[in-house]
Image (cartoon, rainbow, N blue to C red; front, side):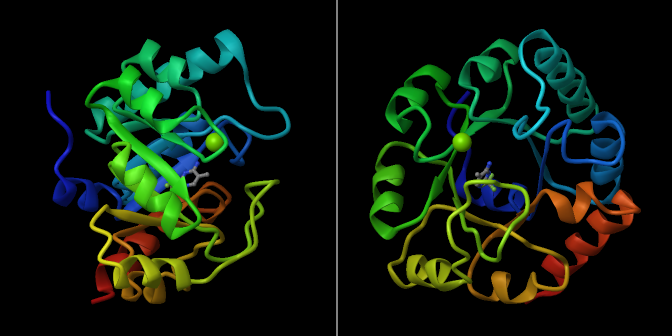
Length: 219
Ligand SMILES: C=C1C=NC(C(F)(F)F)=NC1=N
Ligand SMILES: [Mg+2]
């Protein structure tokens, strides 16, 4: 296996759904199935926040969601927990600046997908040098999903990266909805990632479908 091509990565990032057991109104497997049927292109298992699962319960749920993603041909990414990603043979991991160093994660995961949250041009340049396959950039708008989120930054950082000819695929995150997606894509993001806009929707299927339309209708 070799590292993912950036044009393939850009396609996967179009509608990137992120969720764990605490984010939805019903069981995670049903939510993820509906989201994928609605048009989600990539899934990240992020088990975080009050009441988040740990240990065997976390492993069992992750395995069930991974099996669903396999059936639906959607890559399965694990947030933060590199050991869990390796145990499951997940398709990749996503890490933040305060998680394990990117170089050592790349060492452990081989050619799997490595996503890194970046908040400055310097962090982006460093992350690219350490083998990031994509950047998570945000929060674009204020978010309810991350207790320790930084201040909302709008699309400024996406535009800065594009002006500096950063080649690494970029997915925006933070308070994103179908309504506020067009300017994010226009600013140069390859896709949008969401938690609540899909996981908290009355119709998960419709929310995913609307988000996909918002991304693909923005030229
Ligand atoms: C904190 C995060 C920031 N960005 C992303 C992603 F959208 F995948 F890039 N995932 C996270 N868990
Ligand atoms: Mg993290």
